[in-house]
Image (cartoon, rainbow, N blue to C red; front, side, top):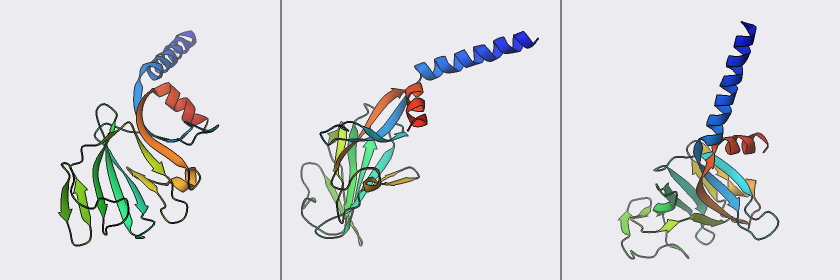
Length: 173
């Protein structure tokens, strides 16, 4: 009987390892895009699903006003701009509708949406003084300057990885 239990436990372990070695998981990753020894180093990875959205929120360095960029994970794992919200015009923000974008003017903000822009990876230069670029995903709020240097260049991408690889990376990070 004891030998039978050991065989069952062994089979369960083998089956579990096989499943985690074959099953893929979708991950939202923030990685270093600066050239150098840490190029492509993954700073953050979170399980994600296609169709989910995340925000990159920051304070504009000129207007000192908040900007919210909302992105959506597409089925092909590229990332689309879903919308942008801001409450004042400033350098490097949209100034008027272009291409097919739509604009809504609200009491407290301007909403720009209907973009036709897809990214393989969203580029973010982490603000040094004012910007405080922050990733909002599900219940996570991650200040990018806390995971990489202010002024550093990171990218946000979505990838598929084997569940076992993900579990190993998380266990040893």
